[in-house]
Length: 382
Figure 1 (cartoon, rainbow, N blue to C red):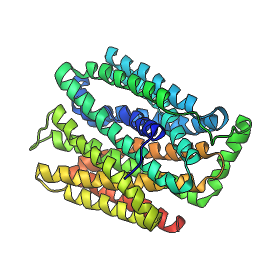
Figure 2 (figure 1 turned 180 degrees about the vertical axis):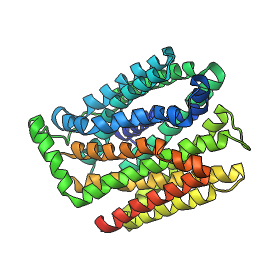
Figure 3 (figure 1 turned 90 degrees about the vertical axis):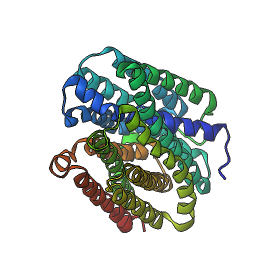
């Protein structure tokens, strides 16, 4: 049983807040494609733009957090996210939405990059995997809540009003983090920005860290590819799920909220390499099951896959915390950059496989990418 206090609750909310908006358009992709007369690849850019912005700015945010502190940046990012979220409701062109999704992505690294560093500094090393798993469980809840809130609101009120509702949730989350998260005690300011960036570049000379950055790439590529093209798979014949129905499929993310804490305890016991092997095995099993024609079996397969993905995430974040002894926020920032580069490509790179082979083509691509992540761990984590 994981003990809870205000710090851990705040970390959980930060994880949820960080992922609330990241993929909120996934359940709306068929609606957006119809409204703007756009292709799946074009509306898929609404996912890519937020992840791309996050990837670009994460290293800088990590360096600034090493200089300026933890809580102030986490709270600032959570509250700043409200503005572009609300603005999406008032624009009427796909390019304008893409710009606002990019602005949303610029706010997000201040939440999760800095929160992950906060965890590594504020808890003893033996407790870090458990707290990381709590953060990861929050990201799972945020991921499903963002999709489900927008899907339900879009069906009831229209896709524009969905973003007004989401902006209100963002505001509440930011205020809760501000009230619950104590100021960092284990953080010590670094020197100038140049010194911080120099230390950050030094992380690229550590093979274990570089391998972990690469594993982060494979994790989000796999998750985004699966659920982006899974949405189109379930919107088509013979399933023809409504927007709300597709949003309900994302409830399988809640399994990640359970799997991440359990996985954190297992990883602490059996080690990161075997823990990652177990997690990738779950991803493969879930994808194989999701090739079945029956809708309930597909959903079950996606649930198994999600469990594996969130255990992978717990293992990789714990490895960053254990390996990066200095400029930890900068290390987290570079991990986040590769993580979201993977997510950005996951939304668009499988498009040729989708058009050529439909859902099975995407599944095979994701399996290959997951195998690559495990091979990195097998070579460099041992």
